[in-house]
Amino acid sequence: MRIAADFPKLGRGPQIVAALLILGIVGAMAIQPTRQLLDQRDRISSMASELQSVQQGNAELEAQIARLNNDDYIEQRARAQIGLVRPGETTYVVMPPSKQEKQAEARRHKTRVVVEPPPPPGFLESAIHFIFGF
Image (cartoon, rainbow, N blue to C red):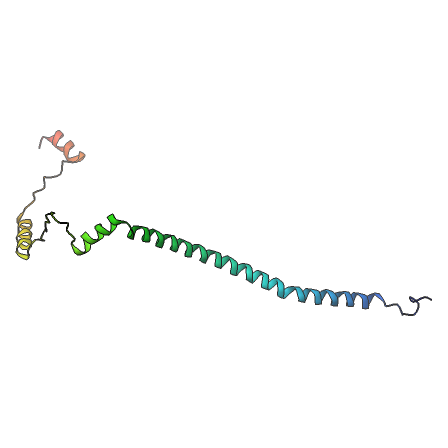
């Protein structure tokens, strides 16, 4: 019993068309997963950079928490913001100059006359003075 004899032989043309059709179907099936893979790689990359920035922000916040738990820092901020004074300390308040003092200072600066010395003679002037004795 010969099975090969029962089927007619196809020529080269239909075999090439069938092979191209199969390759086309396999290629079309591979395009979508490949596109998804590339999209996922881009998404992973952007998420990794976002994760890095979030971790950096967390590190900065942890450093700020550590500063806020430091008694010296709290005292410094209290002294600067609300004028904290310990018992027995003497405080000094430096007052800005009054409007009248500012005006008087401005008048003193305006009345000053600065006389600039004449510039030294240049080469040509020195040569003329040397030759002619002016």
